[in-house]
Length: 546
Image 1 (cartoon, rainbow, N blue to C red):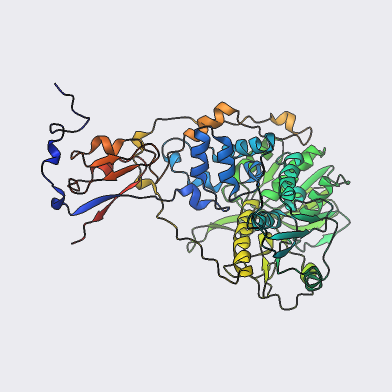
Image 2: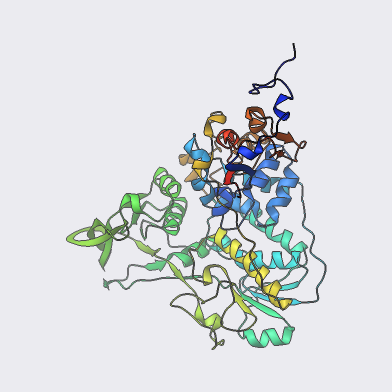
């Protein structure tokens, strides 16, 4: 007796004796939906794509796909706050895929095997970039891929911007940073260090540059006026972090009080502990659950010995005594967020230094001669194409209005490069349309097995406090491939054969490995079983045209 295929109730071939497609009111179609990780990535990476290659242990292919969007995978695998993982649909099953850890692993392979990216065919166009931070370097990289000549002018003696002068070594080892920057130089980017630009227009004309990118960052610490008597040092966090990087005396001794609740405040607190401070206290206006610092930064700071006093503000300083006002947390009903308001109650603590970590602003002196440049309070105003109010002048990174992070700056760099390229060719760049998102309701998570997340090794807190050794370690080859396999391929067919197996009409044809499937609409009744059984949401039922 001939064995019947799974879920086929008729004798083999008999379902094709009569064409039944005319019964349909809806028809199934295969779709490619954008996974939430891809959608939320500020750098615009094809995360699902390179995870799929990593799953097959095709690490160089994964690296090259990743490098189409992000020139710093080894860096981003360390410093990105991975919004992709917060959006990952797998968290509704067990835990989000460790995208960041796999990206770091792939980036490490790129450094280990010295993989390189080739520049595009020379266009003869020249672009001037002011600032060698993440935005400037990323723009330079993408412009070289497009074949343009690029010169970066950097005032400091080393490239990297806030990646070097704002992120401590325990989060980003400098040898990794320098290696990924060097790869960009190898593509032909000219990097002029110790070269501040005092007159951008003049430099542009003398150098024969066709376009300019301002990537000057926000490297001035924001200060707040606090009534003070006595000479207690009050410093800004940006200067302190730069002093540590350049191995200058940082004044982080005795009892260090850090004012601010963000990631920079935690960086200062954790650096002060490593510098040998006797005590470190972070003062934040926000409540514990409303700090702007990422939870893992707060957790690690506490593990290392920092104290965090939330719902407090500094009222005044008298000698070594700091007067704190206790705050109350109240919910703003129109936004649903909590705000801190004064309570009228006070307390005091003693300190040997206060470090302000309450934000950063741009140094307007760098661009002061550009009188036609439209500025905001602490940023350069740009349009959707990253263009400023001056023809041929663009801006990106922390200097423009946006949330400030390395990942966002890298995304700005890619966007700026594409728009500059269009400008150089007298065109306008149009972003390709984005597909519908693969939201959780589109998935059938029953298909996927539970798989606990691979954990990166973390240095013990007692060892972390003694120096600037890297805190978090790498995945090994086995764990990296395993973690990549946890990806559910949201919104895109991975040829699981479910639709083929459950179709009662035998109306689906397999096209071969990597080619997917095809519906035979003459025989499809539009029952929708294929859609309901597709684990990744790659099938959609659409109304039949009348």
